[in-house]
Image (cartoon, rainbow over the protein chains, first blue to last red):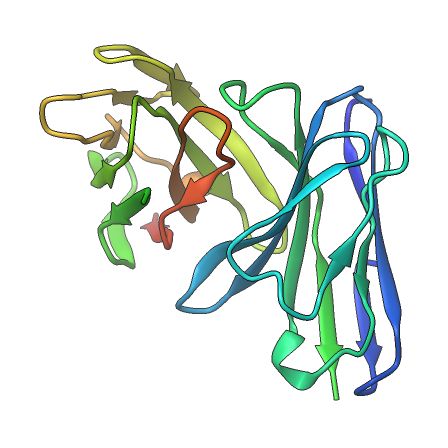
Length: 112
Length: 111
């Protein structure tokens, strides 16, 4: 089944403890993105990647890192999480910008 | 820059009513336009899209027409069902830019 898989689905962590949210797609898509969804703010892009080793900042990149060492994986790294990073995170992939993105099921992160 | 404006919700309808959710955009260049739907507790799913002016996207009884003259991409459905209750997002891409979303419109359909 064609899909984008994120892990974990739920995560509660403490301020400052490094964490990684994994994202993997099995569709050989070039484009991958990370979004966060917050009430009243909608979806905001964190980082995106157009191909292996090519990444760029989105609208809200502060406090996040990404890497694209292979086509299928696009992990999101929070080096020192803070409570304002408590949010619902989505990874998405697409073969090109006009095709439409396939989204993962989301990761609900709580930083206390 | 690029932006998408959607009508605020929630939109509350009875089953079998006609649905319109307004979406307008501003973009530098010629965008591709999308509607996504998010059911409770799930990720976003692509509902329909249109990549050039006057194109009509359609899926599951939903339709939207790319209107360049009014920079709009309104979502319509002739007869909604309870199962259509969800949050609907209008979005665009331009060139190599990635998705820009509207803030979403919640639809609540009662029996």
